[in-house]
Image (cartoon, rainbow, N blue to C red):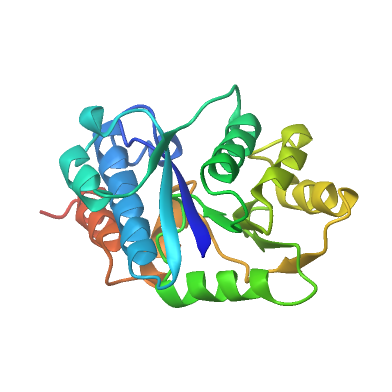
Length: 226
């Protein structure tokens, strides 16, 4: 059974989605982040044949909609993130999963793509299990990546030398994986949520989700509406 790992930060005002401010306030940005995470958790929970795991930075007790998020992951293994910098935290999270669930492949996502569906996640799992694939990588439109799958999660050690959150992160991640002699298959390109333009575009792509509702709740205040 494949581990489906969600790497997330507790949506605490001032600590998440700060590039949405302005137009959002820190509290509004945190609520949008909470909605994105909840949509993501729902998609993972509805994906059949996987083991969901959460790697969390921070505490839901301090977060917007923290009780709701905690309830959504009730029964999930929750691993604390550790390490300095995103690359190290990702590598540690993969290594922790490998130790807890030896021999299982892993597909990892974040909380910035609330348009993900169970079908898309199941497709990522299938592509990772296809002959000739040691890894799968989902590019993001900003040059980063939204999803990474590895037949052996310990191979995520290759991420340690990759600069994260840059326009070259996706390309450099691919190069690091190939440089580790891994055969990498591509997942579809998705847009992740960094700034307000991203939030509007992703809300249009998934209009029925909590994320879209939180974005829509903020929009009238931007045009002087009630």
